[in-house]
Length: 113
Length: 113
Image (cartoon, rainbow over all chains, first blue to last red; front, side, top):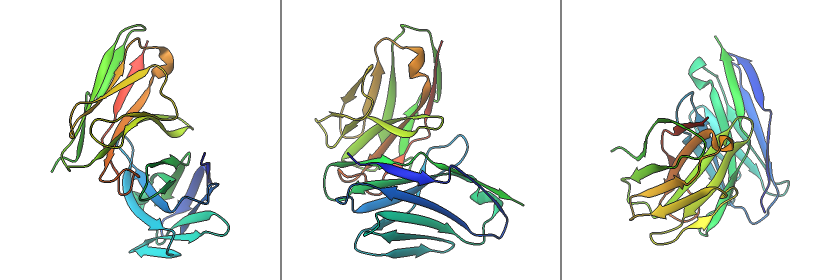
């Protein structure tokens, strides 16, 4: 089955810095890679996703990049703000089928004011 | 628009007791999922229902049963609760069967003593 590794487990940055979270996956059949943000006491919320037919996707201060050859994808947050503090999860799945996603173990991002 | 609603939000059970966690979505999604979240373990799939009338085991199904009551509702039952089932449980739904653009509920925090 699919295996998703996520690093780092904890990331501490100063407000205004950039943050990068990296994930690797094992199954080359995976073609859909969502990222979720989980604030304390809440359920995960989809913040951005990417499909394997593109290499990069941006939405304001967040971006995701995908390297299919190396089987890794990354979340980039620029100009971090204290409200970006949360746990971030990556996942790998196969859109269009019944392939159930596998999640990474999460990264706790702390943005210091 | 409520999205995915889980009840109850908190529950304490004694070992051996049974209970049912309820989940309902109002987005007309076909697929629904139950995850458990434990510290350092990320999100692990318990059961899922790709469409109304079907259910399948996920990564950690032992000790649980599910019912897809109709398109909106997907319940998770613990027949004889054990301390190892202490966790936060999340229900999620997606339009298709591959978890694309999935939405999560707010979670049920369950403690088994």
